[in-house]
Image (cartoon, rainbow, N blue to C red):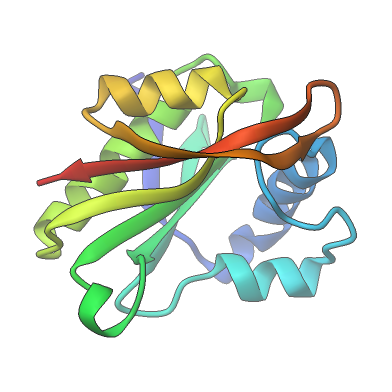
Length: 164
């Protein structure tokens, strides 16, 4: 996708990023965020401080996706990175998620992390699970019936890991 640009988040991006976050959170299909989350709460949760990074994916100048990445835990766990990704519904299936995930993996490697871990990938989010597996992640465990999906009921959350 030659017209896709991934760049660091700027304050001017927030309205577009909030629109994507709100759309994803309201769907209640892929993230464990409370649907009553407001813009201020979302901003405080999504915008990473160093050593983390928040980025946007722009297609033809329009923000169509976002990702945040950083250490999965502090202290003795700070050598493992984590990341989260959201793509606007209108841009799904066009390689935005793949580009964001590849960017995050490359960032983590360049930043000296030993691995990347995703703590809660909804098992019914098949496109994300397949993408992560295609990029080398393994499902190392599933917490059963721990996510209340609006149409599938209680489904599992995968813990996924990629060692560098």
